[in-house]
Length: 293
Ligand SMILES: C[S@@+](CC[C@H](N)C(=O)[O-])C[C@H]1O[C@@H](n2cnc3c(N)ncnc32)[C@H](O)[C@@H]1O
Image (tube, rainbow, N blue to C red; front, side):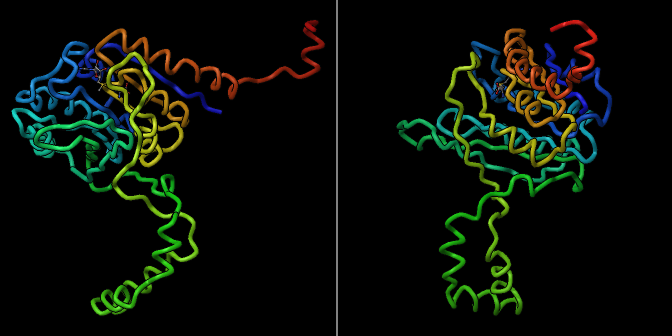
């Protein structure tokens, strides 16, 4: 079995990525520092200069991503002076100008977000996962993230009302009734673009860890075994750890040496598994010949 490669690099991703060739990675999945957040740990970038800060790095991402690869950006704008800041919206527009194709926006619904009370809004229970590509044609393995049909099939599919059928059939003659019957008897369905994952509760000595399920879902959807995954803001190493467990090669970069150490620790325990897969065990004959009992 081919060995999985995992590299954790310390430095600004803008500089570190210069060593990598064009069109190298199959997937970039990352959660960058959010504007102004956690300025005491890894330095916040002011919301009004966020786009300016991000764009040169995104230019490198564009260069190192394969033409059929995908870039997933987990981000959420904060509220400033009582309203949502527009830097994420501005960033999307600027990335399009830079040459990215804004394919999709997934919503990460944080299932277990803690309660709170604010005078002008409710608790924030979702983040954006923006999907960018280099072109309209990219690799996507939809069957890898199918979900059980669940109760919807038991109830909705069995009780199709006449209105359901007549409404759609009247628009396009062979429409709804026929399509819906395609799903009868099936166990699995394609998911939606809303991802329900709990936030990470365990302390990884990093203040902004995302749940393993988040990179896992995108790695399964956009890569195959032995493809290359990049997280340019790898933090505690979640993406690299998940990539390893799914048999993908990966590179993780973080500007803080202490986070690189964490990421190295997160990825170290898989080395054992890799060695095991690689190991060629002694035959009985070889053992006898070596004289070792
Ligand atoms: C939101 S955290 C990522 C957390 C990560 N997803 C995890 O699960 O642990 C963002 C990370 O980006 C790092 N960072 C900030 N600026 C950077 C830069 N210019 N290059 C590389 N890493 C950077 C921070 O040190 C921080 O660990």
